[in-house]
Amino acid sequence: MLELVADDDDGQSDLALLERYRRGDARAMDRLVERHAGAVYAFARRMLGDGPGLDDLVQEVWLKVLRGTAAYDGRSRFTTWLFAVTRNACLDHARRRRRAPPGAEGGGDAEGPPAVEGVVDPSPPVLDRVARRELGAMLEQAVAALPLEQREVFLLREHTDMSFQEISASLGVPRDTVKSRMRYALAHVRRFLRDRLGVTLEVPPRGL
Image (cartoon, rainbow, N blue to C red):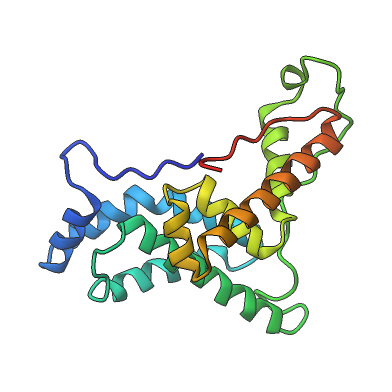
């Protein structure tokens, strides 16, 4: 789970830092970037894979944030707005990549997470026999295999602090649709892990 920190040692919330930036304090934006850069990068990587252009995409996200601070009205949490910007940039990047000629930089299919080599002994206790790195790779493969509509809901719900209502507003779809996509995504992830490990691992949802 990615943690999105709203306050740090000096007690400055995201909104307070954003207001400082609007008043001309460039260091406040540096703090916001430091606070959320890891989560933004991880979200983009899970949306798009490790294909070329990921670093440029993340830079594009922060440029959009810098240019859009005046338009952000504060009615939603900063992280809700930030991940809406990130998600839209990912979709634009994916469309550009699909239109690029084969072999061009940024074109072709995104390279997925590394395959897990070897056969996992499914006898209990299975988690003691599966290296954390391999299990993490399996989870990334499961998420990467989700249809885009399910993947973005899964990532927004499980790897940010957004509620179903906030995801609904961000994606422009009904809340029940968001929850339905989340259920399908969880079912797929569970099946994916079960097929590879030989046991069922619970992937606990938040709020379903």
